[in-house]
Image 1 (cartoon, rainbow, N blue to C red):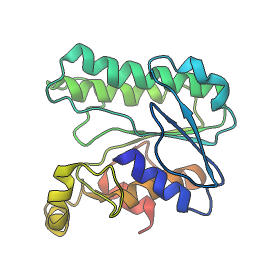
Image 2: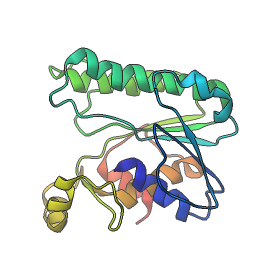
Image 3: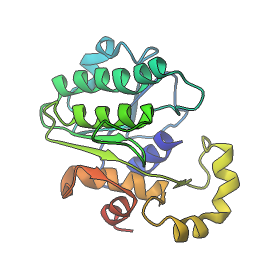
Image 4: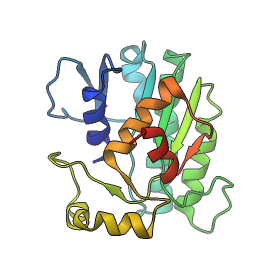
Length: 208
């Protein structure tokens, strides 16, 4: 859902000249700005290394929930997968902005009792050490989906009408998918004062 929403904003934005989508299967979007590269196994990003050069930014939106996933598999698909891809991207692009979709509750001290929070925190911390021009961790909580997009999770469709209530009760963690996409785009030219962006930071940087 997040990847589709961020792609939607990139294709609409006048500052974005080209978009390279890396996915396991075609995204189903056709646009003059868009090019796709298929990567069936994200644990082997070196296979497409040559396709990843010449990029100003990487908006990394891939991730899984920790619910029902054992600790070893969660680390593999959260930390190992993300860092492996980021290292290949960094080698191909020395002057890149890297944006990582993390999540509210992530523990940057890596000492939380919750394994997922420690793994996410370590991922954020180690991404910052890879030598990117800028590296940002986005920690949204509830994300209000963009109408008309096809990959919106069912639970978000059910909760969407209550968005004004979520925003009132959780102003620090609630954002729209549009705001998340715009904030990522704006990091490239505007930067931000903090490497970790919570909900209020995301809305501020989006300029909405």
